[in-house]
Image 1 (cartoon, rainbow, N blue to C red):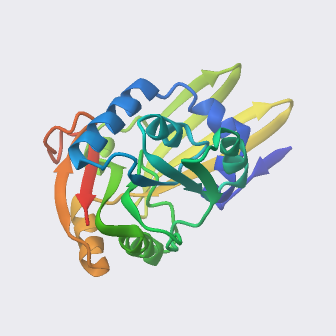
Image 2: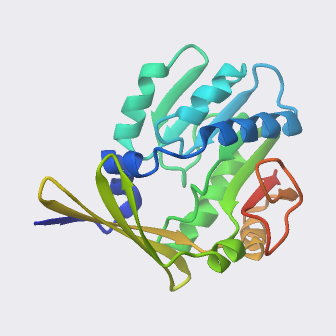
Length: 243
């Protein structure tokens, strides 16, 4: 018996298997990135940060420990329900579609760890950037942390198996119609599951075009979580600061 889904970002993220597959992500590196980023942006003490596509809230929680007033939003109701147990006076979570402006303004809006480019309709990417623009206060900065497509394609592993918690995740990766696609197949309790991740292969030039259409200004570009210079072919990340 096979269970599958095509609208992957609305359902794959809502499964426990997504969090099992990616449980070994380097959160120490991620926290160091947020230390570097908040210092670079000079966000005011107790400043307001919107964490777009926050998942279960791990990074929102960390930003809150740094003294910031944080709102984490995500389309996944299950992830937000999990995150809500950590809410306090300066940390809240909400189910929200990031293509629409959130009804508040912030000193910074973070879209981290390639949480962009999921949509089938390109207009949704533009709507997301336009929404970020509306969510920024007069002195606020937008941040999109995306994969560096050039580096990813040069280092793409076509197929592998990753075993986590006794589950063998068979992963196939390819470039299809301008999307980097990962097909994921695994078996649990005699049920076969199939999911697909599709992320638009957006380059720096693609983002520049989106920024121009949205009326935002690109201020700086970094190539890794230590905020070192971006190199088109060598950098693992594409981190863009704009307002």
